[in-house]
Image (cartoon, rainbow, N blue to C red; front, side, top):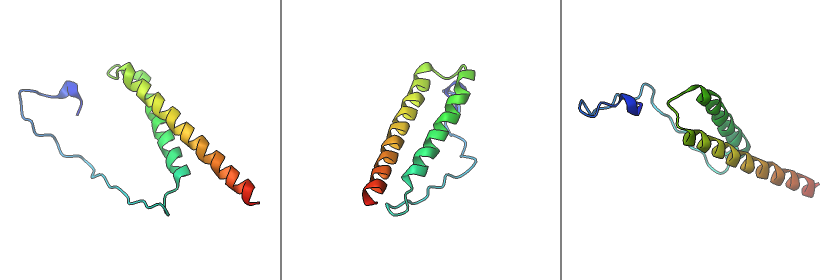
Length: 91
């Protein structure tokens, strides 16, 4: 619910979510960090693409998304570099 639609003087009950959130259990053995980083980057990219067209999004939130994308790319680059060095050292 957007804050501009919040009725401070009316009913304080929120509507239930339309779809239940399902969290999947991930262990160290099943975690695919490369895919997870790419998924997060793509989600941030999709969000960033929609924000310039919305007047209700403050510039600091857009900056936070850009910072998140930079952090994800940094981690992805480190992961790829480590994977490449492991592959070349084991050969």
